[in-house]
Length: 419
Image (cartoon, rainbow, N blue to C red; front, top):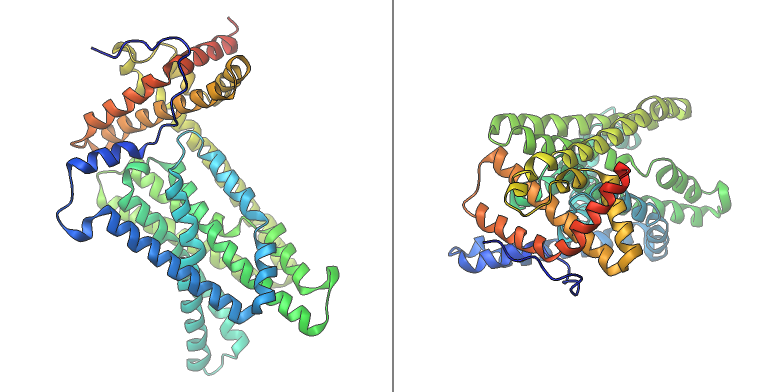
């Protein structure tokens, strides 16, 4: 027997937390090996990221000075909210857990940047010391074009690999890969911009430059205004490859490895082209920017939106069995597969019953989408031992919000169909 229909307009339940299920399951499957403990791994990871953050702040402060560090922080933060908001908008269908996004950003801003700074510095020094014809400036140029893209894309890709490996239940497809990679690269670019802007400010201070002709203004224009998307654009190629591997080749290990390697190599190549463009002069840079980078950005943006649309459309098939079982109304899977219908349902709920009802509709659509992706993952990879338990958990929470969600979706569907 299914739970009875809830009474009309009961109090809105608290927001659904997807990891409630995981905590419940963990109590029944406690690990016996210490290093497999979730808590121990989490503490170790947080400690590593915190240590990396302290070290990277110290390194940047040593190079730029305290004043340069503060100026760099103040200027580098400008594109971060816009980029994060763009990726969160893309991820609205089934939002990634906030802690996954926090880990990705922190990994990019702290651990990845620290490793990249140390490795790039070592590589540049080695080139200058071991290649007789290489001056320090030439060694730096070669390092930026050949070494930095490889090192930086590898350390940024590590966040995608870790979440793919240890948070596989949250890595449902192409959109997740793009979002995780983009957030990681946004964190990396933030710290890198702090360093570049802080150094530029320090040089301006020593030379007495100020205003629009200063090196700080030029660096801000180039890195913050013209190309804030550069690092996310490179790393998205890696995330895209992992997303395709998760949905298209879930049981073919060699195909997944090959696809991930191809995505990483493409990211490195695009990064190398971008870094090498700085040596081509103003005209060469503009050609690379306008005829290469912008079209690639437009193509990946279209691909990301298309992938999200395809994930929405998949809800129709994967949620259809719940119509027969009585959990969903016949029109709900189709309504849930339309972004505009979902948005209209939230709007109608807000107008008629207030913000709390709109939030309940959002929770309802999110849980239904998670349920669909849960079935899709089982279809692609085979059901896990806890498939039924997690499905029941999602259905029970879905029913908690059904009073608002079902009525709002049906009203929105009728409004869009012109009934």
